[in-house]
Length: 230
Image (tube, rainbow, N blue to C red; front, side):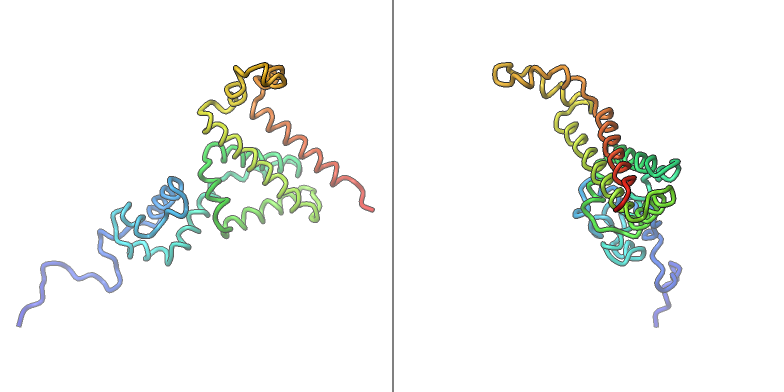
């Protein structure tokens, strides 16, 4: 009868081999890299495991499915977005800071915004919306108006920032050089109005125009919500 092999220590049932032990934070970091680089649809347990150098089962020790993993990635992206709007003195200031934050994040990390807009709402997303609406109401915005105001600023900021980012990538120029780069040298015969408007087009600043548009939007919200109800 053969003696039991004593050359390597027995491991506890269910415990992964040492080479398969990996921190949840490492899995999330690698999963986030994949999603940011190639989109959420490119994430798979197999690809993630190969990237880290572990087996798929090692990933399943931390996340039960791809959906759970993707939800954790999205939660992490949302948590990284500053919540400075809560420090404003009034609801108008909160909305203004909220819009600026969205624009900064969208311009600095456009792939994050694409992921957040294309994937399902997670608990972190709901928590952030809950906190934002609560802040607006605590700072004086009537509850019946808070959702409409939140949505107006959300759509405006995301739309404006994504348009800025797309223009910059497409033109391969600095953010505030889009107009002057794309509208210089036009034929005055074919485009007399654009040619005559060249000085105004050259002077357009994406940041300045964003602030002006934001002022108009918030002023219109203040006027609407200050109007007495009948």
